[in-house]
Image 1 (spheres, helix red, strand yellow):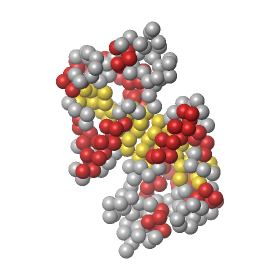
Image 2 (cartoon, one colour):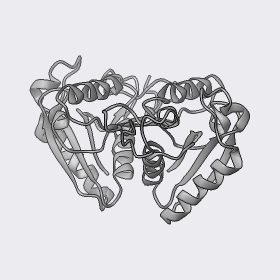
Image 3 (cartoon, helix red, strand yellow):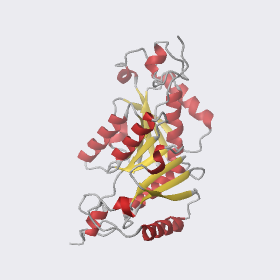
Image 4 (cartoon, chains in turn green, cyan):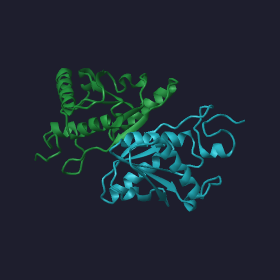
Length: 152
Length: 152
């Protein structure tokens, strides 16, 4: 099926990697994956510095290319929480426990526009060694590495 | 991946069919699908009469066999809302918009038992001609047929 997923992906940690691998698994070889990548302007509301779009995009694309998925895919710029998800013809949005509310809002807005709703697949967040979620903020703070290993 | 799905499946309508086809699609050829089928005792709280378990099971199994899915699958009896989903090792539970709260509760109970949570895939309910959900209750009342066509 056709799926959409989004994020800032900086740095690309094990939570992002699960989000991506699940997206490709759910899409299947005859499906399609669109990965929305937040623009620098949109990502600037984060509490920690973010690398430039071009660098994040290069890392993300390299990671996906290395996996040799047979499913076609594309990265698109996300200027807001929704990107093309309000208008596109697709089947399912893949979110983490953290971003589930965005998917619920996308379906509400699609319905208001007279468009059909999409499936919502909520993946389980990957846990760090301490049992809490791996997140870019925690990695930036130096609490954990990208695999969730404790650094302090 | 390994997925679980559940229902009473009486009669097997287009909403159930989407639930099943999505389950097999998400599981993929190397995955596994467990379909929980409510027992007569558990299903007896419904507001309308339900056909016996053996008959419902035969129809369900015939429908799946006719699809020639390559993914292995099994039907198991559901004596309550959870069945084996509180203890089994699996990856995702597939629910409709109507049954989403059960999946959320399953994850809460798994967590309390120290087990890992599972992904939740919420499919969009299939709409009848009048734009409302197809449901067994509406079919039983004679409002719609199993494809959501208006009968009155």
